[in-house]
Length: 323
Image (cartoon, helix red, strand yellow):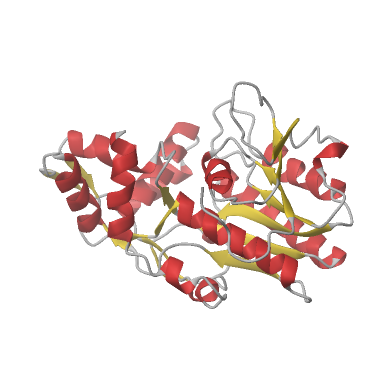
């Protein structure tokens, strides 16, 4: 298990410990103590130093928060509306309840958001200063939760880091690589060869999170900032599919599907939730989704992590995918 550099003198409170990012955060925790809020903690080997508390964002036990300085890692978000109840209760109301329960020892909140807050693409090097334009219910709930965290942190004199990613790859990924592999198995390619996207391995993302938590503990002047999180260089579609073809022995695509703007707009405006979900998926796969990460790169200790080749990270992710 990788050790975090610097002093090991603070704890974190982790929301979303069983999810993709939560598991990566735990793998990279080093000697830090983690206080994890989990709905169903039974049947898992949590390891020494992980203090598990049963509950959720609407039922937070008082014992979750340590009586000494800590940072909150809030990754308990609802990314898909599989039950048809919407996103507000978890992503907005749950975040508000969490903030209301924080104690005086909290030094800051790091929140897992998404570049969906910027609105429909294509995006080519979008910065954190880009106007927020959420068009889906999920994106609107993310913007609302970001605003709640920023306002609370500023009023309480604590730090806030809103982390906006696009595609996460690596251990535990059940969506990005599987979707691309499935298309290749059907000999199809959605989008042109030049379509590009921002990616980052979940464990590199977790290393970034720990560095930001350390920074929150050390800084005498708390900051409330959004950060785009991705490797400095985006992954071009031809590189993405070529790496999968070579690494997995798959046949190259024979059909390249392009989706016109008129079709995307019609699907977005359709009353059917299924049509709207299809529009969002097609947009992600056929329009460039690239983040500018200059702000994060300027944070001490981040440059080397962000300089990693996305192709090399994808090759490493294939080892996990094969297993």
